[in-house]
Image (tube, rainbow, N blue to C red; front, side):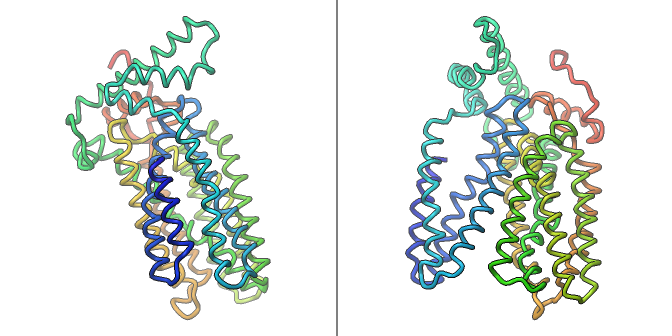
Length: 403
């Protein structure tokens, strides 16, 4: 993380001083390397650094960071809208430097993942990290606190040793696909993250376009986009309440069902050619954003962090994020063509396309996505090894002491 932050600081110089488009492209490509580190390492780290009871909150917090970042970025672009000359694009690039010192300080003082230490046999260091992380949440009694730390460390060691029995001493990306349980876990992780790209999320980024169709000027359209991302912040916070009550699977299934209905509504609204159509579709996309950030947006990060085994978590998350990125590249090509009157000219009828895909994803989620709420990583290992049906994960009792 520290190396990626330093690299990003250097690559931003290329963007800031780019004299032409080819240089700008090179800078964007180079920035993609540390961004890729941020997109994957943060999710795995969040899952490994906190206790089970808090794991859902910290992993879904990643989505809140995305939404807040989008809100700030839109505000910056809105502020630079009427600037002329090179500073109209240099200021947004330069403001990225402002965050990097805070990230570096956080990385410097942040603890190493205790799971990473256990996997490398550094058990004493892992215990020290656990004491630093969990001491404030354990009993004030010193003996009870030490006993709780020892039990947590023992469970971590047991989980890693149990997983090693089905994996070679040196793992690779290929191991994510070799055994049945790991292949299933890789499938779930990859598709769960791909769902973020395939449920119409790219479509919701074009609400500004529809507001302009309705007659709003560019400035007012950007203001509506700011409101959209504010909805996303509220939705993510609300997801913390709902996830603790309903779990991951229920929110994913229910979220996809709701998004499909909204996308069908967008499609049907576009059948009218009146000026109010732009308002209707733009407003529906605001509702879509709120629903997405209540369900699919944040919950995805919990799922992709909890489904892989501890030995393959980093590799599985990297694979899943690359699957997501590939679909987003495709979206970046086809969505503008769908909406552009001089290209495919689907406009709001694009909602039918994404609604159809979302229905397929809803079916997959119902039959293949298990519930991981409240499960330790050891329990997840056992449930996958026993090939428990996704729909039976929630009600299956696991006794680790008898495995």
